[in-house]
Image (tube, rainbow over all chains, first blue to last red; front, top):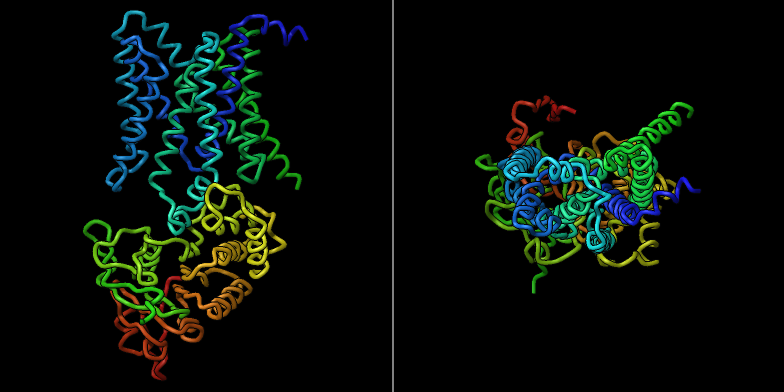
Length: 273
Length: 253
């Protein structure tokens, strides 16, 4: 019992744990759409694309999350504009913007004096540095995003499963796609603090991919994914405390372990059938 | 007052960039008619369906349903996609698929009502897949998958049903279920537009035939459309005229 309670004696650990669990759940739920719609590359790109926003916010001493959010929304919408008439393929557009935004972000940060430490926090997260104010922001944004996912469950389901049905039912497909991109971008922004830019994509994809191996309907997939996301965050944070490793890495590696277990279980079950 | 046609296609042209797939196509389909869309591969059949659904922009012309433009009203067109157009690994059961047909009528932000579930169960039963309701769509055979989508189309209670190649590569049970559905829909005054490679089926089970090869070759009753001149124009060199007057069409499948 002490093993579990000891880290929680520190307020920064309590905040870190709360933040990781919220981010774990949020990423895992949004991640189901990322996995089902084949947007893994986009999720990764969005995560990196928010770097210039963070850098600009840092330079002007603004809120990092606000800067990141603005950058993510801008990039998501530019991808939409690039690909609208089919002149550029989506993955090509993503590749171009991803690299450009990442380069711009690194360029801006490298122009600052203290960049080595800050860059590593932005890239890999700083879960133990979560302040009470950050916690409120993460909680508030998570709630808004999850409520949107609940409210738009049916439109998103139809749009993801059968775009043609979406058209015959007169769903505003382009608007919904943009809303989904914005929700995804906000999710990445929220996960910036805990797992960082470079590991956010893993939290989007890995729990959802694990859940897809274990379930066969969308709603259960979301719940299982959320549970795996939360559990990975908790286990990962304890591992990082006791093994003294970067918490973002520990969380992602835990999620990866769950994925491997699920994959092994599924293979075994198929063999024994 | 004259009742407007269920489906009125006026001088539509569709293409991608410079390439025109369908040129200046016009036809009218009256209430409850069953129309077979026939033509060689690449003649623009699927393109026509996508345009009728509203997925492809028209370069010119217009499509009217009940005398109104395509996007000005709801729910009256149902579409059964070709197998390749569906992601079969998506985590939905057969019942989930059929229930999607009700979303628009129920409202996008409401839970399905008991009536919705009743309609869905009836549609599944009508297609002979009620016992498969809990299965993942990926676990079904090709024919069963198609019947799941037909059940969804029925649950939509459409005025116009569009089916792209429902008779290709399916088992006899599914083919029969599809044909029975067409007869049933006719009683309910639902217009059906169906593309097919099977000219015999088009001639025997449909009221009207639309012969297509990038433009309208002929449109009318099967016996009027299926004459040597029209078939030669539509199928060109892949058509073999026999001495007895029968025609063989060489298609890839």
